Image (tube, rainbow, N blue to C red):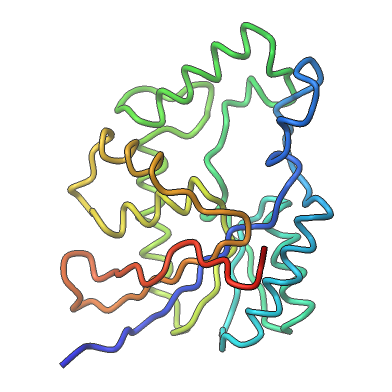
Length: 222
């Protein structure tokens, strides 16, 4: 007999943000911004997402505390009246503090950014306080434990592409994860803005107790 999930989690990537279209900015003006707002297109995406979310019987929405995620959650809440909580555990990978506010075409900044990107897929030191492979996978495990421990059975989570993939990879692979596999899966899976992922949990499911039910569902959104 198939076990029904104890929890169903709907993950929503935030709408298009200013950072998602930075390639349209002249290279000498492009900076590592400390925060990003939704674009007008991103707000329109979230409005369409909210129409879909109305049909999902969520008990709560938990959102990343970053501006683009909070704005996404606020628009959904306005249209659904679902309660919203905010948690730092679902924020995107954190960049080194030394590159925030700096121009991307600066050679020194480029070198720091490259070293940081390498740290995301290797077991080594942190680069100026930025996330690395260890901090991300450990936070993903905490996020899964946090969701398992919530009293609600149907939860929405507004988060970010890279960190959500970390959650999914950790849920599927558990202790079998390696930096090499992690990098390959990060590069092969891409969650679009306002894409929906459904994951289900039951402690008696094989391996970690987690299942990925859908990935990157964009029906009626784009």
